[in-house]
Length: 345
Ligand code: 5AD
Image (cartoon, rainbow, N blue to C red; front, side):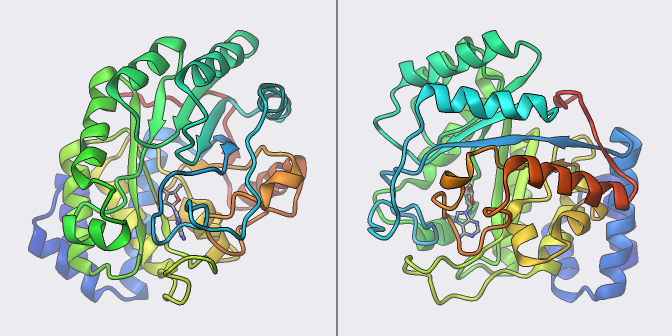
């Protein structure tokens, strides 16, 4: 099996059957080995710099009803909010003070957040923090909207594909959501010129190893600049509330595989990974990740963006969280970069 890892390291590619073999049969020793290989690839391209992306969860209104997600439209048990412009700018001001150089405007698919509102936010953030990067994560929109956001100054867009296998996609989403549209959005974003992020949950209900291999092969074809992956975590008010969470070890395996295939990609140690393992951030970085996404929301909002249960750090202030993260990554010999951390081809 180590031969497969070496092949992946040198060729950045494995055939479907080889990927299936790697994902089905690995033990702790092989996981450590691939984590070490992936980590050294990350260090070759990025050194020991970790990039902070400050998450600003604009709105938890969402028109969709993804079966796994706690902010789904029909969840009546969460309090909905929408931030005002000044609140968003205050998140940026705090983030800026704490050396965050990327702001991620994330939200549910909230029809009230019209294009002109997003464009105005982008321009206002850009005016006040011209050296910072603006990332959007607002779901599926039209090509025209994406183009307008790009022209307003956003340069990155996160839109996980969620499942590259059509049947699994349909198992995770209601009929009104379209697999084809999601994939098309990703191609549109890339074509416009966004540094584009795709990704999937690990261990989502119904997901098999073959499905994960479909995801890997899809990523290979799309060739995104950013790849976000975290374990599935049940949320109590969803149809999947009693499904089992995804495996931390499998997530670490996927991070390493993806790092070996995409040496220069920006790959986060996700909040979901940190939620499922006390040392999830450290483990993610040691498996080849190089991004952490702390939450910049005021504490009274942090608990409301409840896409899954027991989310990491929702009871800490932003300052506490970032200071704590600093110590944690310092303890494994890494540091927070004060650069934007754009994708470098
Ligand atoms: N568990 C883990 N990740 C989730 N996401 C949504 N719901 C869950 C959940 N229950 C992920 C999706 C989405 C990202 C913002 O969070 O992949 O794209």
